[in-house]
Image (tube, rainbow, N blue to C red; front, top):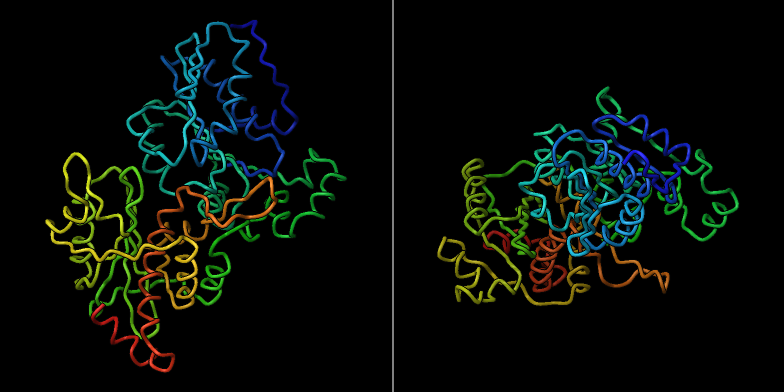
Length: 427
């Protein structure tokens, strides 16, 4: 093993990182820095040098497909000179002769990470990952053997990645580093000027200069959420016990669910809570509803769910609508509509929406990050949003947008202001 030569020659900045890492690290870097190559080789080094029995290390991307596309070839390439390795294509993992293993995961399936132990993890493009992933799933996995974590990526607005970076800067236990293209000179000036001429200023500042304030590229609700912040509609919102609370659900996939809790008065739509979880049955979510009600002493109004809540499961012959009804929740099925129509309906009501800055934190971040898929061949954004961790909050918000827009269209323009509150008193 000592005579094996890995075909990797780190650049100066990469070498400095390899030598200066701490247990927890936040690395912000521009495009073409070589962050994934750095990350894979750091995992490989740590795996082969680990003195613990059966070391386990993980590379995580926002989705499983991204992990395979971005990092799998790198992991195989740099591992191949090592004799006695076993490459498992089906599980995106490489096993090493010392009993170690490096495996690739996607944050779109967090359950795959539950119950395992890790000696180290790299979270690549952390700005596109759910904020709860590390605390709820990965941090416990690192505890048994005091594993390390590297958060790495390019900014996508002031989200959980920015918050983590700012907190880490004030801690001696964390390493923080920020690499702008204008400072590293990895990309030559001619190429930078060419990129700048083809990109919007916001795109260039975000991708090459690591700007936290540049607009998120292709954001579905970018201007609406920016307006909500500018208008100070993202702030503390009290729960009014005199108003009914209505809920809007997304059933998601693989048992994931998300819920917006909403109150309305006059022309205001107040999002007072967002809740999302996975791996639980309907009873868990109904229990969450009851606990929130008990804490704030209000009454529930209507509960909206997507139309497919009525689909019956093959094994039980029952739908989730049936299960919820048996537990005391009567859902109203939302109208089936195209995603683009639901997005437009949501845009129409967002100027009326207020968000509680604390209880809706994860939902706000998800809706802000929700973005359209970019078509590399055509060089334009498509009509279909990316399906990732942000989709659940956006889909349940779309339930709300569709329901509110339907009610608003039943009023004449002059009657909206006077009838709006009365309509939602019985909503």
